[in-house]
Image: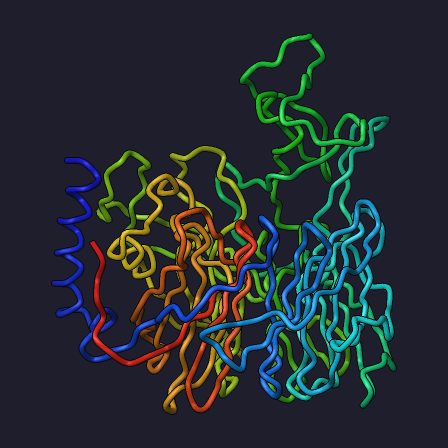
Length: 509
């Protein structure tokens, strides 16, 4: 049976499942994600994070390849337009990793990763791009998020870059951290604290796979100032498809394959490594007293006491277990099982602050594809915000709807499926909803959280175009009582706008 026949067969199965499974009942929840328009940045790629200022219906979007920030007008969602573009004038080796629009002031923040040097924050005017204030932050700054009132800004400093000490044959990485920045009423910095991660030596529930999980990292191993995709690690003059020990990290052997070179050096994940705590995305409570930060590589969420600027501890995200397609063989059959560390990327709080939800993309690699415990839950998961206790997840619903809509990436079946990445949560008609970006399926998925114990996948919106889009950042806004979602698509330099509308769900074959 070929893939086309499977598409028809399982699409029929999907229609039947919708009628019998309350989590997939399109009659009970008749919603769609309707494509409204696409903003083309004029750049081939790089549009990664989008942030909305609801008060003025504007958005800022970064381009990590060019170091530019675009300000967009959202007053006509059917035709987004660019108001202005600012070149931040980055230095060689720097990268513009994230942006955030202040909730009320005419300013935005940009965070710049400077590699093995401390990163920095810039506060700029949204009117003319002028630099208004700035500060040094941690290593590898990534996500930047404002509190609801704009008085506090949090930055996740990922610290994911590694370097190799050739003399001692040792790998090192800067520790991740979280920056807490307090702003005055004009948007200037009045206090700046960099929070170290809490002790990791006695974490409960930390899971290490029997054969190990590894981070794939780009590391300049030979010190020539570039990343080589093929490397003669053993120095015998021949590049071969073999695994070679190339050094140690925190007392554990590090390996690499010569055919993959410095682009994919495997760093082992261990239970007691503080250097592997890499803050990724942030959700802040409405009162700005608590924050929740994903630690994707170690399968955790850090709970942060914002007022006292300290990490309280870590919630372990556990294992997702459900049906899946595990074989990249041209057939799509969800009749295998998957057990996987969730390894969340995006995170958001429900409007009432009672739960946080995570988009469980996965970031580590198993020692081999046959290993029982995989990486990436392929799920949207719900957790109790007070206790960190697991509530429920979407099971295989995300992959199933991408398949039913004809966008499931079978080539990724033996990896992490359609890969949920970014997530935004909002209230509509008195109920909480989530939209999650599916990086490998080039789509957004709408999920009902009306019953947190049974999150229900409702609809999928395919990002227009046939090339790879790879939605990264997602953001929600309202206009005249109607709801819209934006996705920044890093692989083709666009921002897509979807409208959440009621209506019959039409499946594409």
